[in-house]
Figure 1 (cartoon, rainbow, N blue to C red):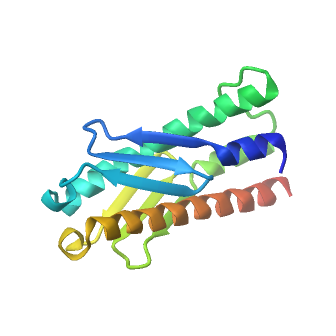
Figure 2 (cartoon, rainbow, N blue to C red):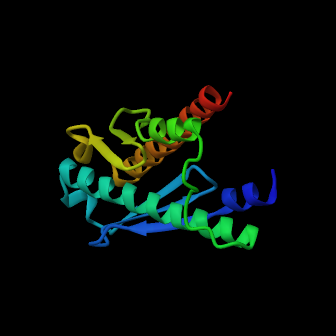
Length: 167
């Protein structure tokens, strides 16, 4: 890999929900580590987990995006705050199509399903009975699996989209 790719791969970003009940860290490009305030998991409902994870996904992606552009700036020596405006019809087509990509990830046990459209509209589904049926440790592992799957799906779809549009 090149210097920029190496630095992007090495990025570590963290985000927490506004109430501090959940914190996530993204590292090595696709590894997500989730931590919960002790005791909270056993006293919540699946809908609480869905709301918190939906918010956390958005916050973690925002943190990742900010860190990405800071890394690009540091590597190139130029201030970069975002993508350049599309300049060709293919660029416009790519940008528009990317906003419709729906990436998905699901835990192997089926308890946690994550999806995101255009990396902006997050949906989290926690199967009924998850809190009673999974320990906190198993739940955190299910989220990790789902997040990794979602990231891999997003990367695969974006790669295919680039190939289709730019050939």
